[in-house]
Image (cartoon, rainbow, N blue to C red; front, side, top):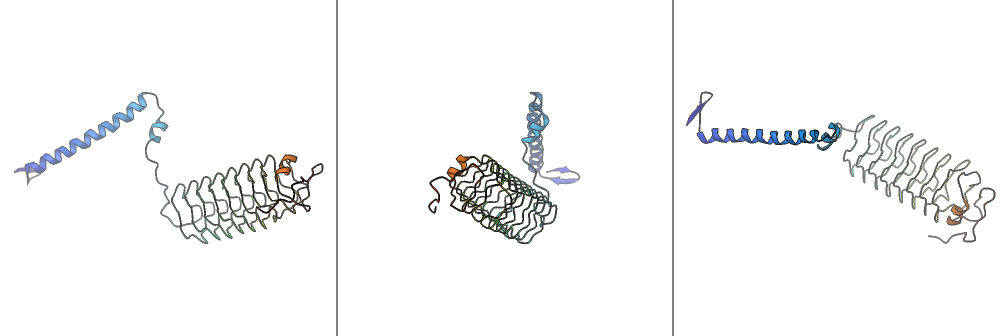
Length: 263
């Protein structure tokens, strides 16, 4: 037995404490050495510190509210119906299979969010940012999303039935087999979008659509008035599925394959 701070301590315990202190000091020295070696070889401090685990978003455990920061948060398979996300930061968030129906997403930033099989039925998302989202089979039925952007979004088999998409930008979006039945598409842009097998036949819009370089393989355009649409080429029309009621811009002709068989 020996004394430490006036108390008797077994020699074994004192030795163990000393060993632990020595181990911590040695570990810290090794980590510090690696850090300064990286700096010594010329790596910028930002790259060195980037190797550390990313900090968790500050508000991941908080309840939905306007302006909340849920960036990179995991919120999969939750019931968030009717929540207020106005101006929220949801970039990179995992919201797969989550019920977001009747939510307020006005001005929210959902860029790169995972939204596969989530649903936004009846939500408002005016001027929201859905750029580069993963939205396979996502439900946007009856969404009011005027002025929103879906640039480079993955939206295969997404449903936009009855949605208000006035002025929406779908540039370079993947929209294979997407359903726009009853959707308002006035002023919508589809440049370089993949609309293969998408259904536009029952969409509603005034004026034309921007279909510059859009891929229209078996895209259903039966009954549409495309006479004022821009960016169209005859080759696009030859790939699409129209009928005798489809109106084309001046100089275009309906291909002999119309009407297409039901797919």
